[in-house]
Image 1 (cartoon, rainbow, N blue to C red):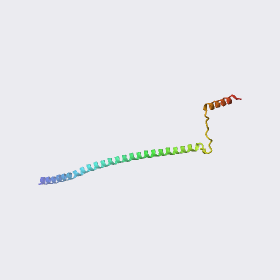
Image 2 (cartoon, helix red, strand yellow; image 1 turned 90 degrees about the horizontal axis):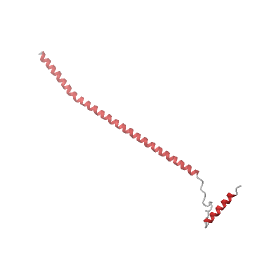
Image 3 (cartoon, helix red, strand yellow; image 1 turned 60 degrees about the horizontal axis):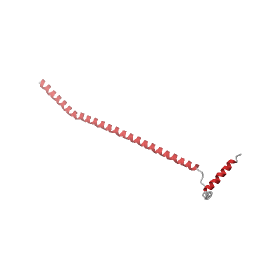
Image 4 (cartoon, rainbow, N blue to C red; image 1 turned 30 degrees about the vertical axis):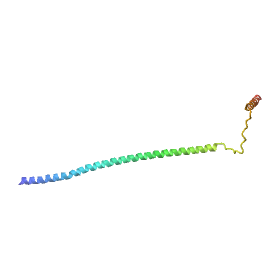
Amino acid sequence: MGFARFMCEMRALFTSIVVAASCAGPALAQEANLNAHSAAMWHEQQAANRMAQQRSVALENQVGALEAQMQTETRLRDLEGRLVASRLPATDATQAAPPAILPANIDAWMAESNARVRAASANRR
């Protein structure tokens, strides 16, 4: 009976090992699925982080461009203000001299003007 009892105990041990292994199988499969799910979530989070960083860089570029445009417009306004201030003051139309009236015979008028210029240049001291 010793051998039969040993065999019975061995069957019980073997059965318990088989039962434990069959129960552990799904747990191992679940762990593999859990690892795959965790890896997928990690990769998804990394992709979301990269997209957020790209959006941040794009927004920083936009802000920089708007600041540069604002500075350009401010400088142009300042320059226009200086140009307006540096211009000669406009005269009142009522105080302006009347426009010169050209003579009817322009050739005679030009000849007289040339004669006056020659006379003035001949009187050098």
